[in-house]
Image (cartoon, rainbow, N blue to C red):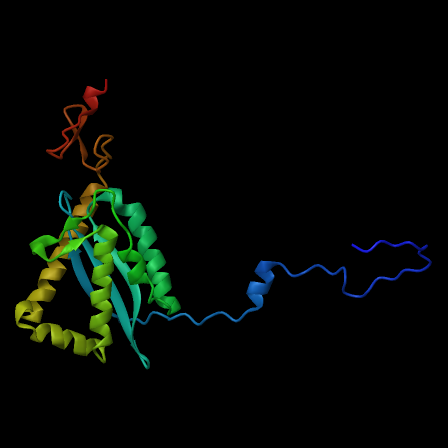
Length: 229
């Protein structure tokens, strides 16, 4: 700082010197926003079954995509499970990944999911098809396979045709019917859960009223509210 050794006779305010700088939010708002992918009424998708060892219920991970002039683009992600204890993280992951898909810059998602390690060291996938470090790693592998599938096909119809022509998948009508029946069973089970209470021991919504007490239906648990009194 330079010292002033003489008397100050006059002073003036330089225009703009004291004007406040724009806030970060205002400067961000002035920048043009990226155009997000708009979901059409019809999309195509693939569903993967994930069942870690020791889990009571499997998870069905679905990735949907749309056909654009620049090729097939992922548009959204869903995870369906009967286990209510997974609901919070499932909603978080699917909403975030779906938002990233629509933003268009999704190349890093697979790498980030594959970098998640579970405290128990992971598990071997069903059928001995390799080992994963965590459930997130398993989902990342499914996403990587999905992106490879849609990048090699021109349209959704072509992907369905390739799947139906694969000998290991059998008739497409049978595959579709099995998927529909599985979703119906899932919906029926979830509807039944709403009439039950959450068990304080295992955290499942499996408590039913029986003999004046609330008892857990799960054989591995068997907790009863009468035991607490």
